Image (cartoon, rainbow, N blue to C red):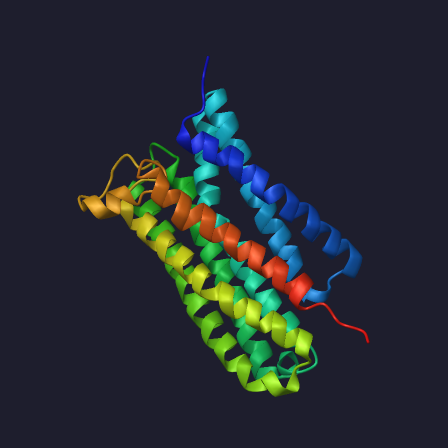
Length: 259
């Protein structure tokens, strides 16, 4: 009878982590009907993506079914897009009626959103191509690497934009400044996760971690066949920390106080 390996057990824990996040963000999306930008919506989509990815790994190991595992590995890359989009949404939420009304800031945020779509498309294309045995794996690997590099570029622009938003801090209400503080704490953690995604893309020339890099450090950082402790810390824990910080900052810290 098929059993779960360490990665399968981590996938089960991942589902347990994100079910409450998905439930809470769904309630917030329904309650506010997107009146506070799309941060919660994309955080919900990110949570669902990680739940689905964990479920695919569980099903793929218990069946076993390599097609399900392939889909889960693709989602490991593509799932970063909604987390970046949620960052974009929360930055916009913090600046409602202030810098979000600035045409230059609005243009930058829209451009960042388009950049994220490009990165998502590249990661999907590279992932799907990488599951085809007859496809050119060099092209598939190049597309995946290009996708995560686009994510990195999106993150750099987001981080710079966020730094710029602090020039409006005295124009913001206190609860919006609190949200901005939460984003400030979360963004470096997200940066570490993006850095791991880049390293992971170069750790192997294929999606399944079979053709590992000749560099032993890179090989150890592969999310599929590398050291599971590094994967746990640099992927799962960092992502969950960012999601938890965004949720805490946008609900508790950004709560209006009525006297």
